[in-house]
Image 1: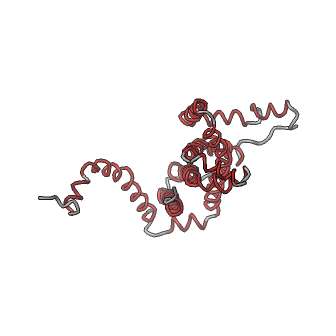
Image 2: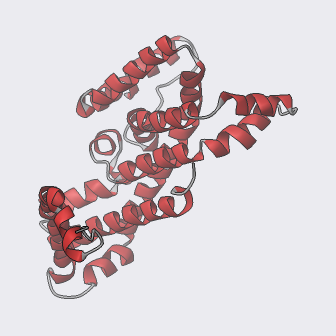
Image 3: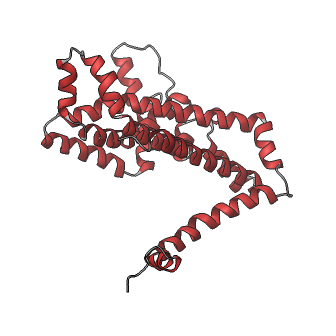
Length: 278
């Protein structure tokens, strides 16, 4: 007698191996998120006053603005720097490409705090960069490269670059080389081939890497806290202060839930526009 695999009982039995993973997901993601949402509307009293305060207070609005500006800037700079690197990796001999990829992966695995402190040493007024530029006569006084937007952008771009390069490299490597050759035979110049052939075909990789960098930048804490100043505080640092210093769990939970909502909305947009692309 044949088994009806479309029956509800069969489908539920098929979920058996996934139950441990679903239980872990519920325990470490669903329950904390629900708790976060409840705290945002229950503390100090029931209502949406925490969300209203976040949008109505200029200080909190400024933090949201700083967060999205920094995330957008880091994503744009990472894409501009990542495209040439990914393209070179795709066209260089495999032996050299593997070596460069190893260097990129090692930079990803290096301790984040150590990399951030290294940039603090390099960018400070008496650091290597300012000292070298002054010795070369290019500047007469040290540049302000830390405790501002410049330092945050430089430090975060360095950290985020691998997350752009690797998806782009995979997208470009998957392309048929004869496509670009055909474009050249049809009279397309290098810029035209890049803009009308390579860029559209590698758009899914750019979208995946760009979304990853943007979302990670929205929630970054260590690098902006060390390289940025109080005037460029980002959302993760504000949430930490609200919860740890001010013990304002309701407002901190509301800010964290808004950040999660923005992340999920961005992911939905990417699926909508790039999910079906090949």
